[in-house]
Length: 296
Ligand SMILES: [Mn+2]
Image (tube, rainbow, N blue to C red; front, side, top):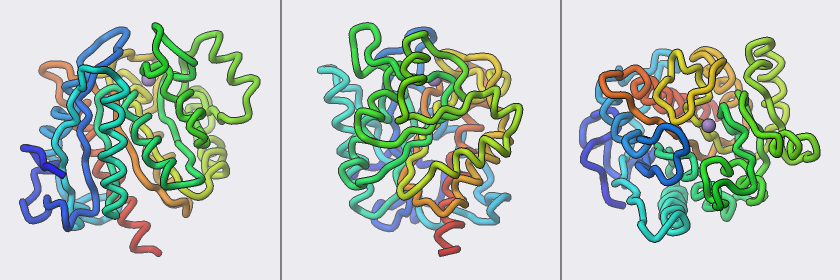
């Protein structure tokens, strides 16, 4: 795979090489179907730039994940022939990454990219559960005439035969609410439930996990107070520590986490906190992955 000009973490070159890397960052600077604020095409680059300024020691896990190697791939280009071709490229990259025994981390870019990653992983894993952090249910069967719209991502995950656990939801249509009431395929934990009883929610999530797990994070799951740089900022989102507490318990639950993504960052000029937070979160996820490996 071709490397990107900027490496995640700004780490020494010997830790950025494909052959030795445990992690592969795949930038997806694609903004196909934003309905409110656009600009997620600038998300991956902003996260990579912000990551240059982090401490490379992760104070929670007491690890320095970069030493296990972090390869940063070249951008996935927006294929002008449409969403299908663009998502096929995501599928190809994720397939190559897991085939090489590396852990894929997709940086978006609009949430639609997740569909390509799930398509790839479903071909490898018979049982796959997706934990879907998002303010929005994203369960529309189609939106603005397309099934590959950012508002339909969760529904496509269900169609792909993966289990779906949603966390932090606080915005949906009547159609999506009806769908959720009649399906057993989706488990939804609303943002209000996270606020009211974090321990119960975490127990509920972990209790529904088995086998292989993919973590998809639409950054709009966070409260707009700390994460305003998203396409549709919904009030009442998760705090940093709520998300960290949930993710830590997921990571330590013994399930096999096979990939993750951080999507939908639409940078705001002059404001670096959102992309810096996304970079820290990506690095923390790497720390947990390695901590679990050491445990096993
Ligand atoms: Mn969303």
